Length: 100
Image (cartoon, rainbow, N blue to C red; front, side, top):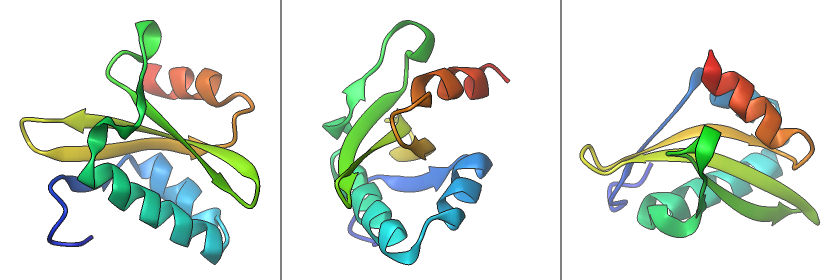
C-alpha cells in the first residue's frame, strides 16, 4: 500500500484467501486495480437493493472480465475489498456471503 493513496485498503478474509490462489500476473493486475480504487473510490458502479453499500468495478485480465466488489467507508477513509471473480454467479455468491 502506498502512503500517497487517499483511502486506506483492507479486505474481508475470504477476499484475501481467493486472491492468494490467483497466478502472480493476475495478482499484480489486481493490486494495481485496488490502488486505482483507493485513489478514486467512486470508480465502481454503486449497487442497489440486496447489495446496497457495495460498489463493483469491472476490469479485464487476459481478455477475461473480472468483477471486484468493495465497500467505501468515507468517515474512516477506507476501501474494504469484499469479493473478486468472474461474472458467472458473482452476484449470487456475493449476496450469500454478505448474508452470513
